[in-house]
Image 1 (cartoon, rainbow, N blue to C red):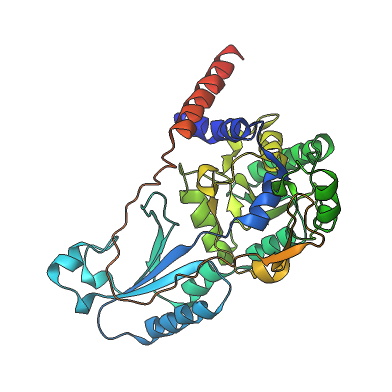
Image 2 (cartoon, rainbow, N blue to C red; image 1 turned 90 degrees about the horizontal axis):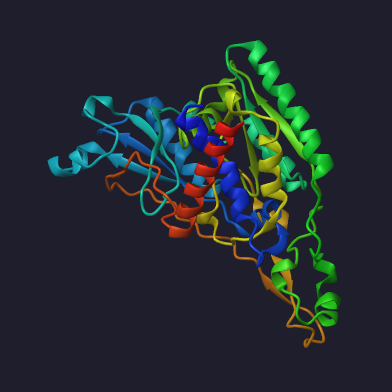
Length: 372
């Protein structure tokens, strides 16, 4: 197995190791992520050079309209004509002013570092393709309805390989659905007051924060080769971590959290089931950055769907429940002309424990491959 494939598979082992902490809250990872992890923001940058042609001007208007929509992006306009020579050198991803106008999309920052995901023509068509798409709308609908995770299958040119991967994915998801169960001890929101009074030692971390059904259910969305509407899905998944060749599949859970894709050669008997066990397992790490994956760009009103009230009870001492609003998350959209300096490195969580567990997981998986 090639090193990049080994890393792609061993990350599944890593997430299971992280999910096994005895101090974990009972709420499954997928539901914890849905209720408590605001979506990370991408940065979309429009690079222009003085006066705009009609198509680029329309693209800028489309970008500006995103500030009024529920999509996890910030946007920035950089006018090269207004920059000094030193500032021009600091603009990422452009070697000559003749390349303007240009559209760039950067992944969310990790440890203060941004990675360039995609660049192309500055057009309203490309802007709209990044902001929303039919399959991503289906993903939002499923997640907001209580689906555990949506598995996205990105197809390649070889239809026989596509069919094989789809069959393997369907088979393994059926096994996962039958063999995995919701952790015991999850407390429904409406039962919190009574339960906490009867069990003073119980943790509020085990209480659900909304009334969306808690269930084990997986769906599949297929991205076909000729589907040009899904430019963003292909780019985000294909460039994250190690680059993968289609066909490949990846799960999306929470508010659009994507785990690193599994290419067809990396599929084995329990690869999908192992990933599903992580998502359904008890949440042992509330720090989002310590969990694997990256968020997709999704146009979704999570706040409106989940509601803005949760029940808070102080170990049964309060006669009535007290409600507090769920924070909506921060909005950092900007339109200034400061140059963007980015780095084509993923960065890392930067936590020694995570690094140690990762190395151990890779070593263990390598030994398993050699023995097998």
